[in-house]
Length: 53
Image (tube, rainbow, N blue to C red; front, side):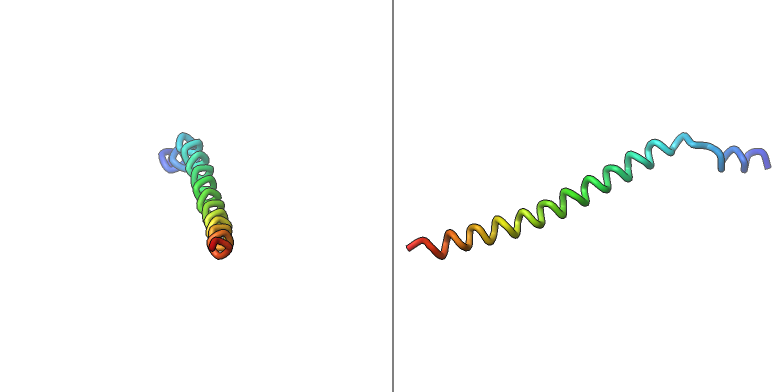
């Protein structure tokens, strides 16, 4: 019973989980940002290409 309580109350991996969640949030925000930036850049190139002779 004492070992079960120790496993439940152990917090050694807590920092790693927090860093992993921050990394996942950072990666997702980069993907969304690049997706939006890609669409804007594509539209800009299309406007320029249609105005060229």
